[in-house]
Length: 358
Image (tube, rainbow, N blue to C red):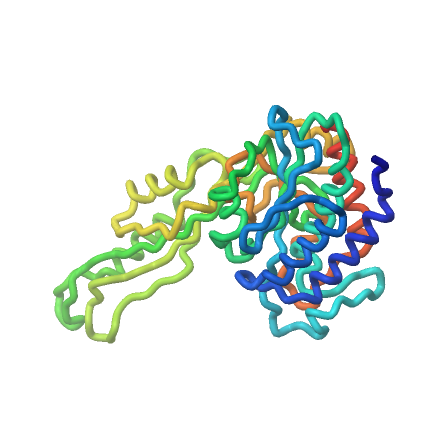
């Protein structure tokens, strides 16, 4: 079958992006944008499946004996902040830009990947299968987005994934995981005027000082060191009572050199406080620097880097590459936009990279 030209793919992708912008899709409220993606599949006769607000599809000549590439991006958005001067739900073209909530994060990535999937869908004789997944709840790291598909949708084994996030089409070959830990220092109440009690606040401060100074020995070539930051502290009820309890929260950005469980072991060995991790879901992720898809991108002038921010990569257990049009610096900002030329260029670069390996 004749493949669609790049110009047609770009026009269709831009039209879909405008419709997505015009349709509110806050996390856990993405049913209407899921309907739009379903319509995209139906209009192009691309068989798909849907589970809640997640949709996925396989290429026409899917062969279970071949390795599979997952193409994934999300269609939920954050809520617009108070700084918006434009209507966040009215797509506006101005000076080569398309403004609107989700235009950059991650609508531009989603529509370009859908275009790429359409491009390869009818191609026989590929060395890889394609699996396209448009998913929900990414912005809140929810359990009913990509994680739901991995857990319940009986997806085929995935060889590697391309996760669409705005990276200026440079290749994030590693991404930090996130571990949020609530710590509780226990003491004994007493009167502040007398030498009595055990001050839980002082015990917490000793632990926080250790957190501030400790350096994990293994440093990631792509991501650098693990970063630990104490961010919240709560203790005491009145000025003359020695607090018997102090709770503080630590934000830990974990590199690909450690698992979340290994980091927790180190904390438990060194802190006197009780340690309560909120979850161990958001794992660090990476793809080898010599992986064929990375080498294909390098051959086309793309660069590699390590990303400090989390994405749905954390929820999939396979090598993954974060790559997409747009700029992470524009994400969640007032008057969010994507350059219109980034859509066409993104589709073209995705296709050229994948052509080298499939």
